[in-house]
Amino acid sequence: MKIRLTCIGRTTYKPLREAIDRYAARIPHYIPFELRELPDVKTTKGMTAERQKELEGRALLDTLAPADFLLLLDERGRELSSREFATFISEKMINLPSTLVLAIGGPYGFSPEVYARANQKLSLSRMTFPHEMVRLFIVEQIYRAMTILRGEPYHHD
Image 1 (cartoon, rainbow, N blue to C red):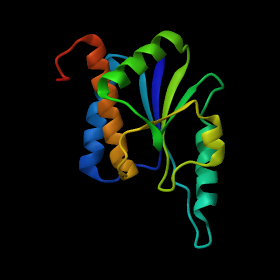
Image 2 (cartoon, rainbow, N blue to C red):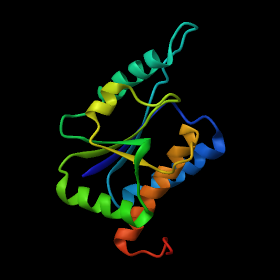
Image 3 (tube, one colour):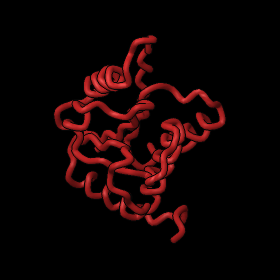
Image 4 (cartoon, one colour):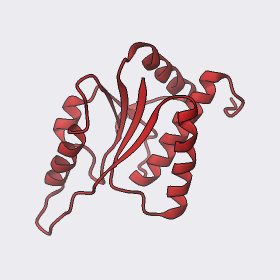
């Protein structure tokens, strides 16, 4: 199995980018990992949020293979503890022959087409976070999950 984090747009704030890169560089020691940033949709004055979600959704869906498991990071998703998330990844490592794709949408979220294709939704919190910060949170949690599964001392209960 491989894990791919797919995001709309780039992380532009340098300290945040450096933190994301630090955790993203650690993950491949445990499991194949890719961070893929899709280009921002160029908005125009008359573009609606729905149209922007549609264009971003099409770009995201174009990156998926039929066997990919699509996990949306979404405020309406299921909340898991770090240990529960590690168990989720462990189960996917056993049962998923393809790629686990975690997706972070743009500022307006996901299109109905993306929701229809999704296998599951995960929420990091009931609070709302900037989508660039969510990238840092999820790469750290993927790294943490790997250390939990290996019994390494990074995670403390």
